[in-house]
Image (cartoon, rainbow, N blue to C red; front, side, top):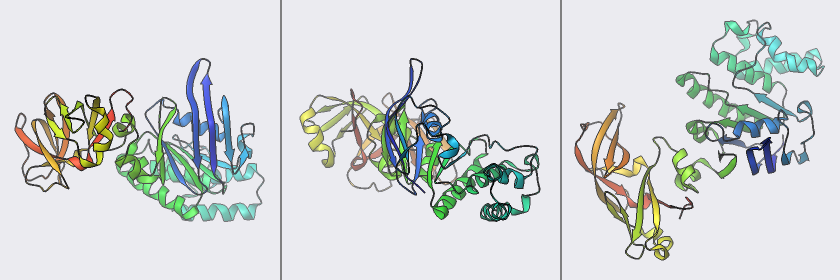
Length: 362
C-alpha cells in the first residue's frame, strides 16, 4: 500500500487549461473522494494518476516515488471504470484472471486470488457466467473483483456507480466503503454526486474549473465551507443564499425581504465590514417552522410558499423571502398550499457569511 501526492499538477490540451496547480496529499490507506461538476478536471486528474493521461506540469508520487514517466502497468494501481470494461466473450472467472495471466501469475496462486476475491464480493456462484448473463450490480462486482485480485497499492474509481439505478447505487456504495475498510488499500474515488462523496470518503477534495476549492472531512466541508462554491455544491437540498449588506457597525444583516442580527460567533468578523456586501447562507434544516424549538438564538422571517413536496416523513417547502428563494423542511402534519404566507425561524448560530466580491467565507 502507498500514499499518493500531487504536487502543482497541471494538465493542458493546447491552450485549454483543464487542471492548474493541483496540490493534494492522500494518506496511505485513506479513502479520498474527488468531487465536482462535469468538466472540473476530476476524471482527468485520476487518469493522470493512472498514467492514462500525460502530465503537463507538476509531479505525481505513489509510495514516495515520482511516477510521471512510469508506464501504467508499473504504477501498482488498479482502476475501475464507469463502463465496467468487461470482456464479453469471457466468463467471470476469465475476466478476473485476465490481468493475472498477463503477469504470468502461477495457476495455483491465480486460483487462490480469484476464489478469495469472488468470496469477498459474493460472486463465487457466478464464475461460470458471461457478462451478458449478469445484472448491472453483478457486473460492477466483477469489475471490482478484477481490481482486487491484483492486490494493488492504490485503487482508482472513476464514477463506477453512475450506470446503476438509485437503489443499487445506495447498496453498492456501502459495499465499496466496507470493502475498502476491510482491505485498507489507498483509494481515490471520482464522482459528481455529492451524496456519494459525503457518505463514502474519509476526506473530500472539491474541484471546480480545474482548481482545488477545499479538502477536508465530510462534516468539515458541510459545516464550514471555505467559499460560496463549496457551500452551494455540498448538501441536499442545497444551501439557501441571500444577497445582503452589513449594517449597524456590522451587527445586522439587511437583505431584500428581511433583516437579521449577526450571531455572536460572527461579530468579530463583521465588525470592521460595516456597509460591506455579503452573501448569507443558511441550510434548509436551519430554517425551522413555527412551533418547533430552534437550536440556540433565532430570528423570524416571513416567506411565501411556491410549492411543497411531501416525502412521507417530511415535507420540502420551496418558498420566497422577498424575491429570494428559500427551501426548508417541515414535519408532514400540515402541508402548506401554494401562496400561503408563513413565518419561519432562522437558527442564527448556523448562518454562513461570504464576502460578495471574493466569495470567501468570513
